[in-house]
Image (tube, rainbow over all chains, first blue to last red; front, side, top):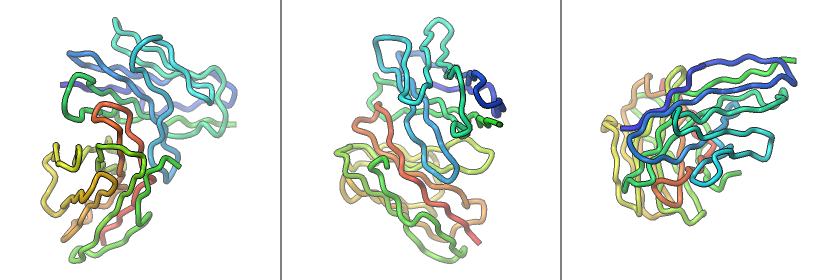
Length: 115
Length: 112
């Protein structure tokens, strides 16, 4: 069985500060990894994904995440956050070798960016 | 806009009512899902449909009844709900069962 742990339920930061949202996963097989963002009263939007290849993946709005197989982590980082980055962030893992759907989400991290 | 449309966006219903949530995608995806998102709880996968066949039912009470008439449409029929069923219900779809899911904006359901 696979699982996802997001270590911080809330992360408050000041505008223009760097931020790291932590995600660790547990899986006995190879994985695909995802970060989703949810703004208030909205559905989840895919932020970035790791399927294969380069372990560092980037989004169009300055976020990046690095797949670390030895540490089973996929932490999300941004060097300088904006007020508009305030949202809830979900890490998710899926099993590409399974025939059934196995996209498992973490509990989410609420990022609050203060002026 | 993700290409997944849910209606209605908000719904208030009594415990004896019957209502349906609708989800539509025209992305050519083969898998569709219902999730429940409650305050202070993680996302809960409710149902999975792959090529119109239900492949997963995560012990969801029978007062929730899904229907997938074709690969573009997914419904969630609701009857005799409880106040604790109040939540944001999210529909999602994906090209394959292991690829990223695209979510609709959700239906905010309040059971009174």
